[in-house]
Image 1 (cartoon, rainbow, N blue to C red):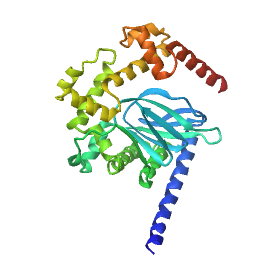
Image 2 (image 1 turned 60 degrees about the horizontal axis):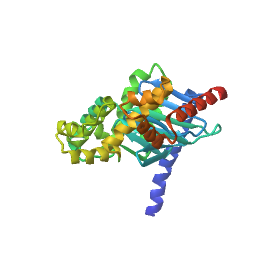
Image 3 (image 1 turned 90 degrees about the vertical axis):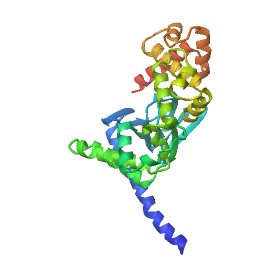
Image 4 (image 1 turned 180 degrees about the vertical axis):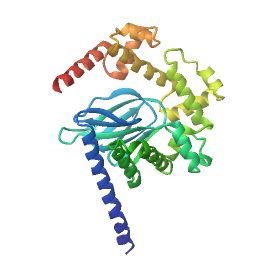
Length: 317
């Protein structure tokens, strides 16, 4: 008898979840009619792709990601995070990652939503919800995947719904944004979300270090100085930095340098040696070895491959 009651409670939730997912699919398809990205509201990105892709390297800002259809994989260091329409991904620090669409086709395109997480807004909701007192000092990995529940999906669908209503969006969108953050705060990713707004403890220190590394990635890495300024020992800094980012500080800096070098060669037509020098390498051969280790091929061959792939996409479309 107890089992029957549990099934009766589960059925309506399952129906709500399926209904919400279907509406999200329909609305994203209506807004994003061709492959690419559209931003109907500040900080809200809607994405569509009809083909799986190769891993693209970039730096993720703090963001909340939901997939309406298809699946995607995000790679941080040696760790992989795959998610689909039944899960959401949250990133709470600026992390250099590689990401690619895994499942997509012209008949069933990959459709997704990304929402930037504003630290000021997160802090405000935390205080109003009475969550500030429960902030933890322990370090947590600044990225993870969790199951998407019905209430959170419902808020996401309503946000996309008001994005199609310019008259309502200025009034309704901020309210729905606060609801989404609240539901993340009371969900299983609560400690990870608090990472964005915490004002003491290791999370705040590591966030400051990440920001310094992003700003000064082309400079020598003064680990002892950074640790001292953060009031941490070198070993403690290494431990908590790797706990949050899945990389050592040196690996983190290397990833930022190589991604920026790739951008310079592709976007500004620099040769490998010039790009290497611009991002802080003194030895071009050392740069080439590390570049090949990350991207799979030497620098100029990689850039040529990317340009040819981009040209093929333009011709196809």
